[in-house]
Image (cartoon, rainbow, N blue to C red; front, top):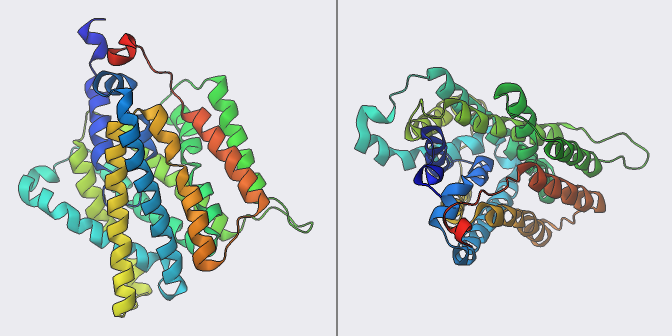
Length: 338
């Protein structure tokens, strides 16, 4: 196998760099990070590292589940917009050392439209996600968030002109059918397309669109710049909603909100670490353990029990997402020698 086969193109490398930075300290369960280059993983990581990577991924899933429990615990006392402002503010503090170290280079971009869209989309998506977690059972809210990979398929077809195989197309349709199962009619009523469900699906759509924007700008804008702008604009765009619904936290709530932000950042760090160590095909499915952790936490803290429809629908969505996201690994590096 020649060296050219094992090297990544500038666009691929830009995507890898973006995956390592764009999700830190933001409430973005990074679907794009699951699409890290198979060639790079096969070349750099041995299968024995999957165990260590799996531990990091489980830690990430547990952190995200705890974060969801805290969001619901704070509950109606603080609006989703206000909660998002607090979390975005904590995330912005993380980028300050980057700005200080890089100076003007940290915000230099030739694509202002891309950075503005990402900042606005992430802020709105995070707020919608918080709203859904506050009002929906946590198991259902988390299951609906997994549709991000399903939204990626039609967007990649329409915006990137990517070819979509029959398997991916069918998997996507089956996945959205799983959503219908989760919100299936009860007592003879119609499908439960209430605002919380629409918010969860809208959040997944917007988060998926930010991943598409990364692909569209690959090689044109430094990923660190995208990360910095997303963090700063997230705070800026969250100010109006926070202003309109402001409530000064007491000591107890302030500590819970601080813990929420720190745990979110810890979860992102664990996710990135696990993604960088293990093989994508092995690490990706482990993230779905978040659904189990969330269900257990919701049961013990709030007495929530997932419905049969949620369990069946979530299973359909997860299987369909794995099929829609799967990429056959190319035989390079260690994979070729196996």
